[in-house]
Image (cartoon, rainbow, N blue to C red; front, top):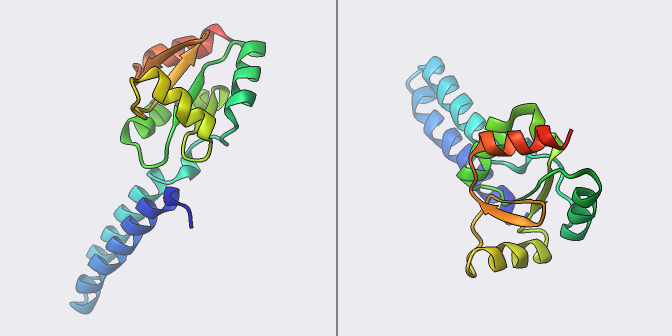
Length: 145
């Protein structure tokens, strides 16, 4: 199992364990609500909500061809989740690079952020922007359309 799934699995298991108490007391509604809530948290923190990641060289090649931003991210990052959710459907138009799977991406993020792996880092026209406003990223995506 990769570390990208540790947080979602932990959330799901915690929800399951917390739901045991209400089930034992016969309060199935509370148990179901707990399990549903923790399952939703696990889903949002999983890599499943992000578009398929590509390699850094491929992302830069595609970005040079179509002008779309490259988004460096990692699973479990709340700021990355915020960006992904606030971009909505337009998020699929960006080129996403998971820095935990791509060492070149992690190195590029460290180079842009004084040695720190601060994500999301969005590269537009060769310039990195650390944790940009989702509205700004949406604007960059609409410009490249």
